[in-house]
Structures are given as C-alpha cells and as structure tokens.
Length: 233
Length: 219
Image 1: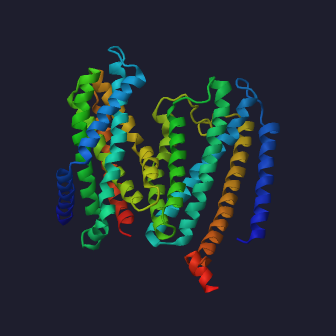
Image 2: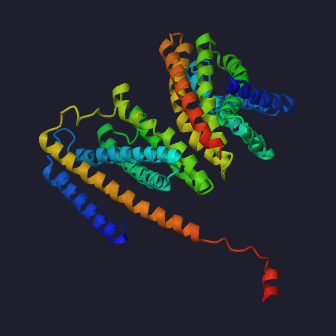
Image 3: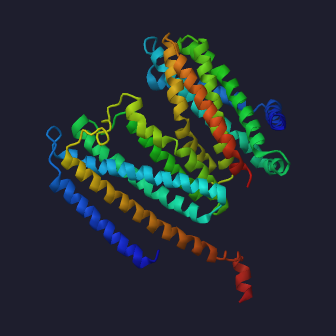
C-alpha cells in the first residue's frame, strides 16, 4: 500500500474510533450496578479480541514462512506481533482500571488475568527474539517457532473463564445477557477496533518492508585503522 | 529405529562428557540445596508453615535449576562448534534434538534425586510415589521445551537473557498441573487427574518440539 492510502486508512480508523467513543459514552446506557466504570468493558473486550486476531496472524505467518519461506508472511507476522502486544497491553491496563473500583484491587491471580499476562510476556519474548537473532532467515525461523508455540496460550486465555472458577466475569456477549443497546455499542466498538488493528498492521508492514530494503542497501563500512586512514590521505 | 539409536548415542555422548567433567550435576545439586536455604530465610519457615510452603519451593528450585541445566545442554556444543559437525552428518535433526533433551532430562532427574530428599528432610514433607511421578512427568515436558529454546538461544546474542523469557511462560502449564499434583499428594489426597494431564502435556510437547526441532537446528 502506498503512503497516501495508508494515510487515508489511518484517518478512517481514527474517525471510526471516535464514532465508537460516541456509542460508548452517549448511546450505551449506564450500568445499574457498576455505574460509568462499566463503559471500559466495550474497549477492553474489543482490544482482547483484536489481540487474539493479531496473534492468529502471527501463527499463520509463522506456519506459512516455515512451509514456503515466504518473506511477506514473515513481515506480516512481525507486524502483527507488535500490534498484538500493544492491544494486549491496552486490555491489561483497562482491565486493571476497571478492577480497582469493582474488585477493590488492581490485580488478582485469577486464571484469566494470569494467562493474559503470560500471553503478553510470550509475545514480548517473540519481539526480543526478532531483535537478538541474526536478521534474515534465522530470526524469521526462530520467531516463527516462538509464535507457533506461543499461540497455545490464546485458547487457554479464552477458555480460562469456563475451565476454572475465576473472579473474571464470564462471557456476556455470547451468553445473550447483554441488553440490546449495550450489544450494539459493543459490536460497533469491536468492528472499529478490528479495523484499527488491521490499519496498524498495514502501517507496520510498510515499515518492515522499508526497513528490509534499507538493510539490503546498507553496505557495511570498511573497518580501517585510524593510522591507515591518515596514510591514505 | 535409526532415529532412536542416534538419539541414544547423542544422549550417551552428553552423559559421558558430564561423567568425565562432573561440572553440571554437583553445581546444580548445590544450587537446589541453596534454594532451600534461601527459601527458609525468605519465608521464615517453622514447623507449622513448612508443609504448606514446600510445594512452592520445590517448583521454584526445579524451574530455575532446569533453566541452568538446559542452557548448559547446548553451551558446550557452541563452545566447541561441535553442533555444526553433528548437523553435517546424515543424522536427522529431530534425533539429535531428542538425544540432547533425553540427556538433559536425565541430568535434571539426578538433581531431583537430591532436591526431593532434601525437601523431605528440611521441610518435613512426605515423599510419596505421586510426588515423584508428578515431578518426573513434568521434567519430560520441561526438558523438550527447554532444549528447543536452548538450541535456539545458543545461536543468538544475549542468550542468558532470552532463555528464561522464552522458556518460563511455556513451562507454566507444567508448574500449574504439577504444582496441584504435588500439593494434593503432600496433603495426602489423590492426584489421578493431574498425573493424566501431565502425561497429555508431555505427549503434546514431545510431538510439537520434535516437529519444530528441524527448523531450529537445521540452518
């Protein structure tokens, strides 16, 4: 995608997030029990789903890379991992802000909270592998392996509320317990957040392409001792 | 068949080299005993709380001893550049990987032979068959995952930093299930379900890591 197209897509994503904010703060009713804090739910759950989606892209990119050695798949995985970590951070921070007034504490060692934290650490490790491994084929292969193993934690996070008895609220959307207006606000926020995630991945993908091109162009500077350099002159 | 004999040969090589130098096992045995000493000061252990704290101390000591053991598994190969030589032979990478993991698991099991009696002695816990089987089953899964990432980090910069970051999160299932099993066994209840789950996790990760070994080693 060209820079102009990416600029237009970013503008669209920002406007859509403002639309979502309108639905969250103006359209959705205030929760009878939790009060205004409940409005965190819309973005908290949406960014968790966006993060799952990003990590699924990392998984697919990794599998395709190992299978076909396709550099585009690797770039896509790189881009999605970074965006996924960002959305996991948003999920964790917003969850903690919600938990303080509702549970009386920012953090509790509940299965879903713990597994989400582990998810964040796994993909932060993925980004570290990318930085520390030799760029190119080795970094791509190693990261693909980490991305594939790391994805095992995604279903654990998702089903933790059903597998264990947790303090974290269970699924409210699929269980049809959400009032219609809240559901509309949630679905719109989710669609806007997923669009934002897609645009962020596209921008990061473009950066990765440019970085790869820059790395190819860079010719290592010849190592010359200062005395030799003077002598040459 | 050939894969198995290659794996056994690699494992035998590693164990022979450890037997000749006797570097890793004595150091790890001291390390796990020291971990118990540190836990004593950290938790202010007395005869009342010792049994409740013991499972946690066991897994902390085991996890960190495992990181050291699996990190060393590929360190010698890297120092001598002998891994490349092994990979140049016709041996499949999965077989070499399986041999390395087997040797590392056995070395960690020897450390457990020090850790578990020490725990029983200093913390006054009962060592039952259930405790030993849970620890050994967790060792298998931890060894294959630990060796996979040890093989990976042996070729990158800042390997000492990266190994815990990659390995510890993926060991968590073993610590969760193994921890429950040990806690139940030390408290005198049955651990049947947890042991089965550990076996399932072992099978899952043995299969996944042997599939992934090719991409990490062959390069």
